[in-house]
Image 1 (cartoon, rainbow, N blue to C red):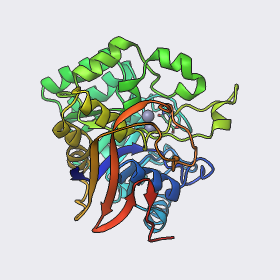
Image 2: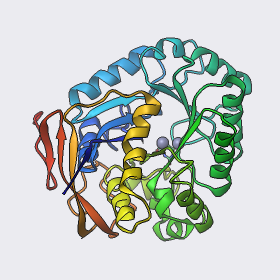
Image 3: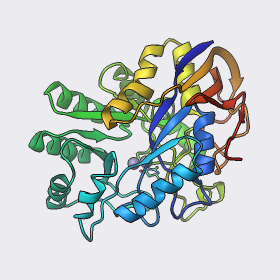
Image 4: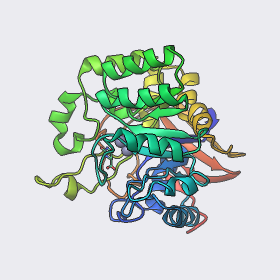
Length: 345
Ligand code: DOR
Ligand code: ZN
Ligand code: ZN
């Protein structure tokens, strides 16, 4: 039996406000606990977006009332009035900027707007980017020009991780993350999974997956799930299938499996899923909070019914090694052997 800290998922979509048929604070944080996460950082591409102080605060208060674990939210960008970032900068741990189009979200493509975002956001707080391919160069250029911390979400390709490695070697204040789906799945899986294997960035080739693993011990700072729940009905719609896959409950099993296969050391897993996200985003320590793990248990995923409201996983029927047994949050057992022991029930 192994005792480790409660993990941090620094990139999830909990869909509040505007998407509670996909996920809500209750189901999303239940999935978090079942996956060994006691702290979540939720994205602002909601409906409406979390890009004004009032909506950010209301959503944050709701998460504190309804959530079964700690949740904080990224700030979003309000293109009608970038000054909202000044008040949000006092509230949110980081701002999320999209340089590519994705679900519910239009991209920033104007460099003067990027400069204004930088000017309005506190210089010591991170700016996190959804940036793919050449857009990563724009994000790196900002870090170079302004000498301030930026974070690149869900890096998926060999050229991208190598570009980030060079920028880090040059001393730029850049951090980055990868998702388990980009570490464990390729374009061949996307063909097999159909809509259930579609997300942004898309699954890449084996050479890209190999490059991510090669940089896991060095360039990569964070593993985050990019938990992006959509219902099966929405995913299977031939016309409007939205991109994104759930990941809160599969991330720890996958990474423990990698540890059992000696592709990753346990110490490094803890840096990627706890120490680094806490440091990069300046998150508060959770006292008396820990997980108990059986690192040798073998099972077919999912071992217990999923807690995410969307109810599916691209990793279904995978063989996993390593099971979460218990979650203790601030001294209270909140999850044990597949069951939530919910004080808010
Ligand atoms: O696949 C994705 N889904 N990528 C994103 O950047 C957004 C996310 C979502 O919100 O569903
Ligand atoms: Zn994204
Ligand atoms: Zn995302």
